Image 1 (cartoon, rainbow, N blue to C red):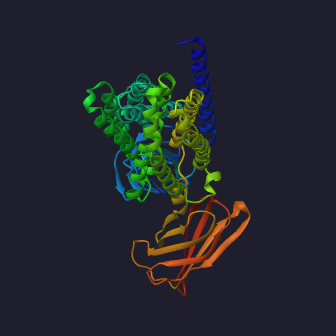
Image 2 (image 1 turned 180 degrees about the vertical axis):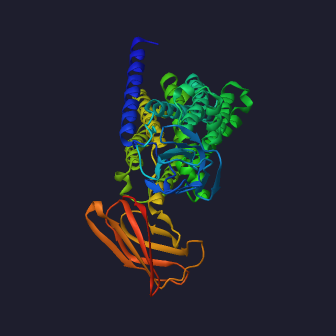
Image 3 (image 1 turned 135 degrees about the vertical axis):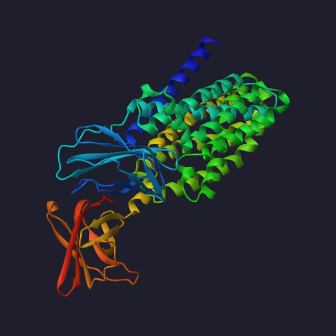
Length: 541
C-alpha cells in the first residue's frame, strides 16, 4: 500500500474514531442520570417514607409491567443488608416476605429487577418503624465505567452482525465469486464473536448492579444468560458463526450459510430490546427482524463493494449492478419497518424533544437523512457512469461509499445509546399508572387509587371495608387531599357510588406533585363518623 493510501486510511479511521467519540458524548448527555429502563415502579407497600407502628409481615412492589426480581435486600438502620429470598410474582406485583421482626428506626428496601425487554432497573424505598431516624447509606450511583463498556460492546456487536454477517451475505450473493473485502468482513465477524459473550457478561453485571471487577464470577454470567438479552447473544453467535462459515467453509454451501446468517441477524435483534418487547408483539418483533436484516444487507455490502470498485472496477461492475437493483426494495422495507417501530415507541411527537430516547432518535434520523441522500446520489447519478467504466466517477463512488460507512458507524453509536433510555411508550405507560395506598385501622380500612397518578385532572376510586375486612355500608364518603408544605388549601370532594360497590370522585385536579395526605371521612351513620388517612405519592406529569 502506498504512503498516500496509508494516509487516506489513517484519516478515515481518525474521522471514524472522532465521530464515534462524539456519539458517546451525546449519549452520555442525552441519557438519564439513573439507570432507568423499560419497567417503572408504580406503587410500594409500605409507601416510600411511611412511618409504621410495627414491623410489616411482607413488602410489595408494583411495576408498570411484569418483572423478574434479581436482587432484593433490606438494609437495617445500622447499614447491615439482609437478603430477601422469599417472594411471589402476581402479575405486575412482587410480594416479598419479611422473615425478620424489625426494630425501630429507618430501614431501606432495596430492589433490582429485570424488565421484559431484558434491561435491569433498580431503586429503594425508605420506611420507618416507630419514628424516623437517620437513613442507612444505600449506593445507587451510576457506574460510568460499566455503562461505557456496555455501549462499546453493543457497538462492536453491531459491527459483527451488520458489517460482518451482512458483508458475508454480500460476498456470497452479490459479489458471486469476488473476494474483495473478505478480510475486513472476517475481522468484523471476529469483533462480533468477542463482543457477544462479553456483552452477556456486562449484562449480568448490570443486572446484579455489580462492578466490573466481578466480571469473571459465574453468578454474573448466569444472571446475564437468564435475561432476554441472553437469547439475543445466543442467536447472534449462531448468526456470526454461519457468516464466518460462508467465507471459510465449502464454496458450495456459502450462499445457504450466508442467507441463514442474515436471517439470524434479524432474529437476534428481535429476541430482546425495547422495540421487540413493545405491544403488539405480533407486529413489533417481525418489524425488528426486517429492520435488522435490511440494515445488514445494506451496511454489509458497503465495504466489499467499495474495495471491489477501488481495486478491480471492471470486475466489480456486476456486483454494483446487482446491489443497485436490490437495494431499492430493501431500503423500502427497512424504512417502513423503522417508521412502524418509531411510531410504536414514540407515540407523541412532543416526546422527540422531551425525552432522551426521542433526542437520540432525532440524531439517528438526521444521520439517516444524510445517508439516504448520499445513497440516492450514488444510485441515480454515479452508478450508471461507474458501470460504464468512467474512472473519475468510479473514484467518486468509492469515496462516497466510504462516507456511507462512517455514517453507518455513527448510527450504530446512536442505536447503542438507546440501551440506557426508556422509550416514550414505556414512560407513558408508567405515567398512566394509578397512585395507590391501602389505609388500615381498627375501625375501617380502604383501598384508594388516584388515576393517573400524576399531577393534573385525575379520578379517585375508593373501596371501603371494616377493620376485619368485612363489608362497610357507609352513608357518605368524602375524600380530603392536603399538602400543607405547599401552601395549598385542602382539596375536599364528596364521593359518589357508581353501583359496583366502590366510591368514586371525578371532579378532581391535583396541582403539584409530591407527598400528599389522603384522608377519608366515612359517615357510617348519623351518629358515627370514621376518619382514616395515609400519605400518597403524586408523580410529576
